[in-house]
Image (cartoon, rainbow, N blue to C red):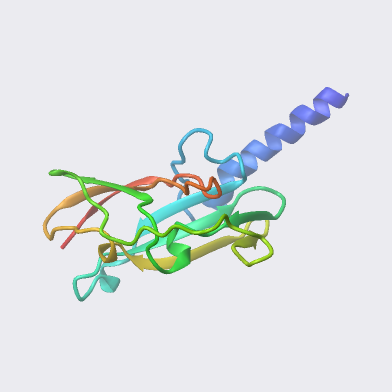
Length: 167
């Protein structure tokens, strides 16, 4: 009976993780194997064409807690920081890898007591818009493959891979 309950629980959890984004009106996310072990999923997507103005390439960065418990994570080295502090995106185009032009910040290890972590409740999503051209030289008329590589701190996993065209 105990193994039946455990199997049922695992099956229900798996179904929830697969169906929850669909039920919430979101597309399922293509997440690399093993990236979801913390319960966090990272998703990037392009903003609508109406938001692409003044030579910007506006993107949306989202972190979703897919677990059934709150998860703490350090937001450093992600667009949630609202400034560029590390090369955490892998961007390739027809001419190869796109170089990072932003700052590289060295700092002390993150601390929960100093506010370097945030808590994301079960099922919640935290997102922010950002301009990819602030830190990467993207050429108009080009197509690119983009993936957030996760943090070197191990707090955030890699994102889905997307393709964009820059106007």
